[in-house]
Image (cartoon, rainbow, N blue to C red; front, top):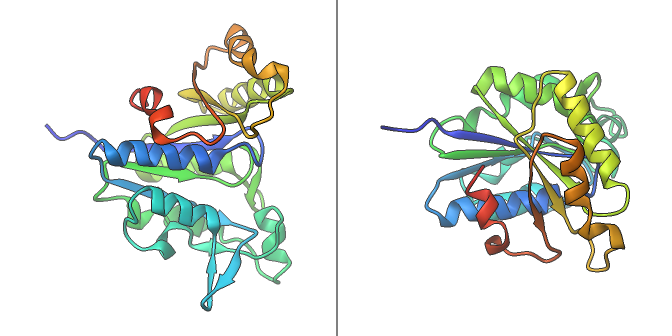
Length: 229
């Protein structure tokens, strides 16, 4: 019996929490287990020009980790140069982010993959387009694709307990229940809270902490909990 393809949204509590790094490790883990992996990043800012084309580094990392499925241009259909939130980066160029394309851009990834990994920009409630948040994208992708699971990535540092609990609580308040939390060591110099954060978050949230990703981790470091996604 064929299983339905899995759809996974990598969401964050904030920007620079390790979403792309974790997403790449998850993509590699599934790829090396024999799955066909698709990747989609609907919009990116802080892009650069390369050989006459705009390149989103995060999108290219995801594409490489997934084994270069499809074509790179389909991974991230909307790319802007300024290192700002996507709506502001678009305005800096006299443009706007196309909210409809954020959703329809996933179409090339609907078929032919065992798992589709989607990565937003910024935190779960960061804007992707005017009046359109990452949380809105999840809801609309669910209508387009069917069920999409949400994995929350949080930086493993002082303050992450509040940010993680607030993100999960706010998500559930609008009908999004994350399947799990991953703590990402975004530095090799950690404060003393790093070893306590998982247990403290678990005390106050029913969203499970699936694992911790060490700084400089490889796919073997995520294989155990990635298999449970």
